[in-house]
Length: 411
Image 1 (tube, rainbow, N blue to C red):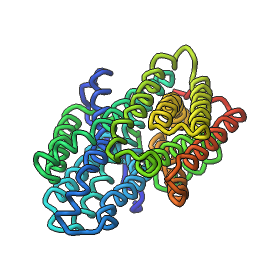
Image 2: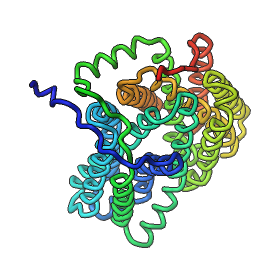
Image 3: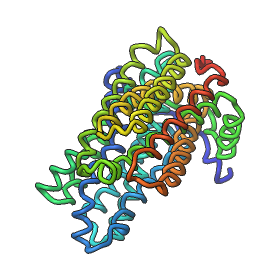
């Protein structure tokens, strides 16, 4: 027996199946841990710098390392969950997150904090990837997009509220309290997963080998629909990453506002995306996923064009940027769950591989876009809005030539 072939996959231990609402609540909690862990920490950066006497660039490494390891985790956890089971992957990821958070809580130096942040983010990536795979295992094709939208809504809420909660924690108890809360939250979710999360991906005989999973990835990248899904996901991520990274600087440099105001105006983005995801649940069945994607991309284009027009007319107020971008976020909230559902529905046996590829490549493309746009000036919103409008045009044009996103998976 070769090292790549550990033998027959153990038969999942019989468990009392969870009802849909209970399962969805647990998956929502697992999915939301990643965004919460990221944004709860952001208000702590100045205190970490003061505590360790470090430079801004050095402290920023504690944030950038988490992005790198999270992206790496996206590629790793999907195939692992295909090979060893969803339940095992989720519980292992939560254990790694807890270990990283404990290291952060007790870090004696900045180097240890950087290491802990990387470990923590790698663990949280399991929640995003494996929760998607569990949804695809458990629910019929016509419910996947709606269910993914519900999970994304939980992540968006955590993403929107975590910075405010983190600020209160840091002010009241110091920056290490952030990690104490994350340890407690991860422990609660881990216990719930251990007690109630069913195994949804049992293989008869041998589990898929590494070379089989690589073959699946190559097969998917040869599917025109899967490539279109990657392109449209990359469009969404690129616009989002560029906007959230440049708009705080534009608030200060171009609009003369305090950087802290970004957190308040960001609610337009969070609410827009939340409502877009909510609409997927109401419109997916009667309209279909292709209609959802096309409509979302049209709204994204119109909103980006409106924002660019306001900048060209020299309307200088945060609302002239954040209202159009809030509408744009609504369109993205319609688009992304349907695109993801189509991508992961293309393969039944290796859903985790599809989930990893559709999670990793668009984020990588978005990160490259962010790096490139970082060289443009922020004393005007024009470069940012030109980028958003141009990429929105690309998404709108590409979808005209895309195959239908209404995938019917063979059960």
